[in-house]
Image 1 (spheres, rainbow, N blue to C red):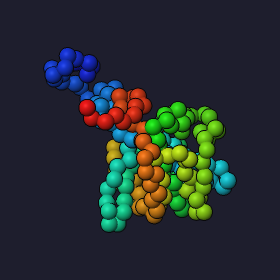
Image 2: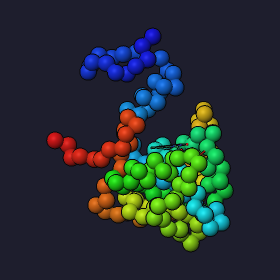
Image 3: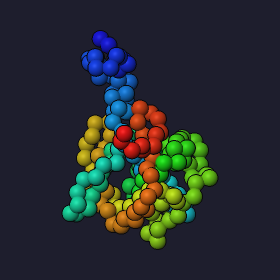
Image 4: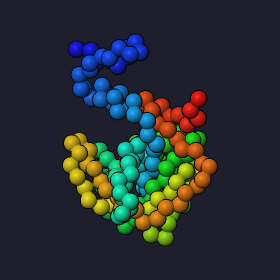
Length: 174
Ligand SMILES: Cc1cc2nc3c(=O)[nH]c(=O)nc-3n(C[C@H](O)[C@H](O)[C@H](O)COP(=O)(O)O)c2cc1C
């Protein structure tokens, strides 16, 4: 069984659904990246999530999918308010930092807290605040609905794009 997705353009290759193949397959779908953060006491806690997806206008809801192995999510889930920052074009390094283990993720990151303790990243493309809502089974992940409270849009700030494990930027269609 072929497990690589590297093949001549146009030639479909059947692939076994191993974890490695699935990572490659999911990585073929471009996304933005959202930093999700909240204060625990006076310290910011957070992580990067590319699984962010818009869900509902009324009531306003988005969803994320969180690995069951995440040590950060259980700490965020208890927070009264979460800050969500859609990272901007030049924030790839910051994103990696927010996904790293065993480091102070917010070292060198400029952030601010809302009065309710949501943590927002400066120079992002969009700020949202939300409350964690219903949780659904998502295999080795949990699908978490986030009920939106506020939104601040920064017009003209280009988003970071994550695709095939690389950070990229948008370009106009030729
Ligand atoms: C670009 C990118 C996107 C990510 N998206 C998610 C995601 O949607 N869900 C998730 O659970 N982890 C995601 N992660 C991993 C987390 O940021 C983090 O590394 C993970 O939660 C492990 O740390 P923790 O044990 O502190 O939670 C992503 C990492 C990167 C670099």
